[in-house]
Length: 125
View 1 (spheres, helix red, strand yellow):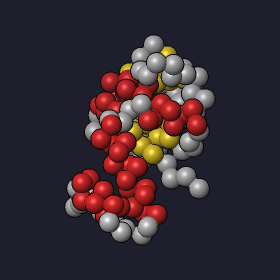
View 2 (view 1 turned 30 degrees about the vertical axis):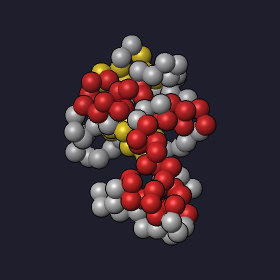
View 3 (view 1 turned 90 degrees about the vertical axis):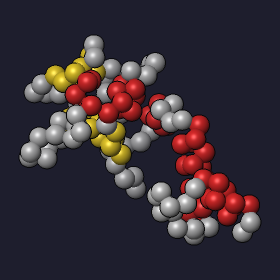
View 4 (view 1 turned 90 degrees about the horizontal axis):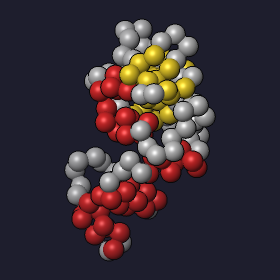
């Protein structure tokens, strides 16, 4: 089972502008434009700096709106490669440590334990 992931702002734009990112939306991404109904839309393609849906074209810059987002409902190995390229080395390290800590039952609470403290726990079980 996969929990969906939402990307917004510069991170979402960086994904869409990644070298080799397909324009045909083979990953089945969806787009939420911040509408009051809370409805997201299927994306038909990414074309020339635009997110294309069956009803409208949105510029990539629309993702800078606080409530607009790309929604990833299914992961694939190819998409994972693109997502990994968005993360900084620190974020990659933190994610790796968190996965290992969760495996040993350590509670992961965001913003309360530093990366160094987490690494200490792994070194001294």
